[in-house]
Amino acid sequence: MKKIILLMFIIFLMLIVGCRHQEIKEGQVYIVEDSDYLKENNKDILQIEGRIPFQKYHNDNFWAQREPGNILLTISPDGQEIYFMERLEFAGSEQVILGDPGDRVRIIRENLETAEKKIVAANIPFVTKTLWNGSGYKVAFGGGGRLTIYDVQKEKLIMEEKLAQETIINFFWSPDNDNKLYSEQPELANGSIYYVDSLKVTEAYETREESYYKGRLDANYYYGTQWDLVSGGINTVILEKHGDVVKNVIPGRFRDSYQRALVAVGDQGFGLYYIKDINVPEEVIVLTEDYVYDVKFVTDGKIAFTTKKQDYKDNFFYLHLVDSNGKLKNKFEVFGASISLMPDGTTGYVNGPGWQQVDFVAEKLLQPNTEISEPAEHNDKTEICQTLRGAMTTLYDYQLKGDKNQTGLKNFFTNTDKPHQWAYTDMELIFQQDVPNPVHTYMMKIKLKKFETNFFHDNVSLIIGVELKTPNGEAENLDYALELIKSEGNWLVTGFSTFPTSLERQEIEKVVGETIAAIQKGELFSDRFLPAEVEVGQVQFWRSGINHLATTAQSANLVKVLLQSENNGQKELFELTIEKSVQDSWKPSELKRLK
Image (cartoon, rainbow, N blue to C red; front, side, top):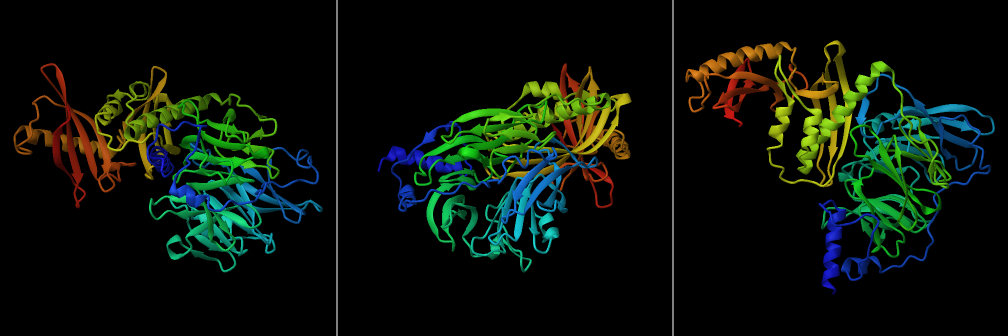
């Protein structure tokens, strides 16, 4: 064997299943000629053309005369009905500060002959995928982690309540059972199987099926995903109708296909890999190593996919358009991360403000980004959102990647007094911690959950929700309570879970005063030293059970108090820990010197 080439391929396999990788360059073709894995892959050359997954219209312009703001999702197999979606506006919904905007829509069914309309589903996420079952009597809509299944004959949704509780990011109908649907979840490539006639669900651990159908290659063959029992990763494979694997193609999760070409993402959604011809699976083009929000084949076998634009000033994304040879044709700044493709594959819409239209034939954005003007009273909130994006990115760039962004520290954090809130100091202390297993990239989403402001005093209290995902499979959902202040015209984070006006803070300050006196008299923590002159600084509330900052002072059961003194002109910092007992009284438990 050619040992060097074999070694390169092993490294590439590790890349696909989520290991850290920096040497692979985007848009390059990597060919492996001598490998037992590929010998097995190539034992069957499939003499097929594959399919073009688009619907042709009888009248190419029939949708052009339609009311703007509606997106055509599908035409029924008999050609008599169309299904389209409309935007719904919800003023009370959570605002997305960073990440996919999360538009809400309703789906409408219309008879083309009678023009009769019926609302099929409402208040669901922006739809990015629509699939009919084999008989054409049931249709499934997916997007934003939500799956919706509609029975055309009975004119009702199927398993609506159950599906509303699940997070499903991909799905496909069984080729030999019209009432069976395979699903994919964020952390489980082969998830639950839904039997829509009997309304039963088979969980992944309950089934003996090793491969799940994910896409159609032609009339006889299908794409699927199968667990690799050796590596623990997931492989994209080609299946025949009854589930037998006829060919291994590539590690990763299948996303879409066009004739003999396919795209797959890494098992956690990071990295996008393009194979132009399934008969030559060793020629893999790496389109990106970033987190991929959405990807689709469009007209003429071109590929459209979205990634996050890394800029705290806005919540924009990049829409990449790649030709059938894997070369980047264009890259657009867009407001959203999700793509809804018209059935003929020539036109797409990106979610977010305005639902930007993309002409994939002319390869241009028909609604370019324009500055969204906001009323004057909203300007402060816009700047606050920018600060939150910058602050949380600075925090997690260090905690996950090990990147110490001093500029971000100065631009987004500050210390304030009366009362003391020291977010800047908090970040300096975080920058001193070890980062054991840094990653090269991550995905973060931030939602604004609660917003209380006193613009007269230039301060804001809020709660945000943060969702995180890394290429090695780590995922977190955490809430943060933050205090912001306007200083010299800029909004800055001044406190993490400090709750400056809470009654609990006043109670803690009393306990701290008594504790300091006891320590200085030698009555408490006799092995710890505390100077005679010490200032009570920041009071920060925690939840000890989950080892995370509390989102309300009432829910906290642990408090960390920073004490500051001066020794020979040098500032000293101490941390006093106070815990809530079972009797709901606060007791000091630890004192340590920080710097």
